[in-house]
Image (cartoon, rainbow over the protein chains, first blue to last red):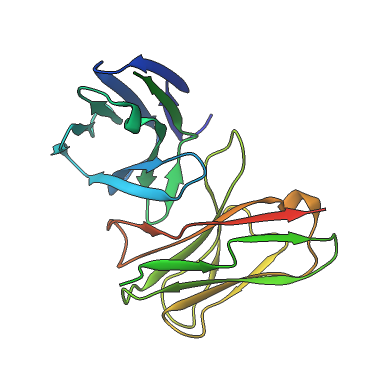
Length: 106
Length: 112
């Protein structure tokens, strides 16, 4: 069993929809990271959180340490949000999920 | 600041050839990492360094060597390339554990 599981693997949405991507993990962590990778592009850090909730623009990340679960929400999705979203847990090294591929259509 | 840079961006090797990938960061970060990214799999850690002069093995170290002679540079070497090493390689750095990690743009390596 993978230590970091993301769901769904693929997600298609219409512009304006509310998006949720989930991440569950099975190890003790010091923090959890959400990353974004555009097709053929580099990897950008969106959030790092160890408790509660963080918000940046239309993106919101939450974490429940007791449940070992985190969610990434995108409000009012836009085609430019189309990318792969990667969850990674921090255990002194990062352990990565396999990513969620999001496509947002106009 | 350039952040994290990687050289080269693309490379094609024949089986058995050697090469070195260079990662450089200008943020005075202690920790540096080399990952590979393959279709359908998450990023996997090859080697990492927690400071100048130190290196350690990650999840998939076989066939690779690394060196961190200067704090700002982390080199990844392939002594005898194999087709299984065809991948996209990412370097990353951060100040310390539980801090944001900054990624380089990636190197696409094909071994034929």
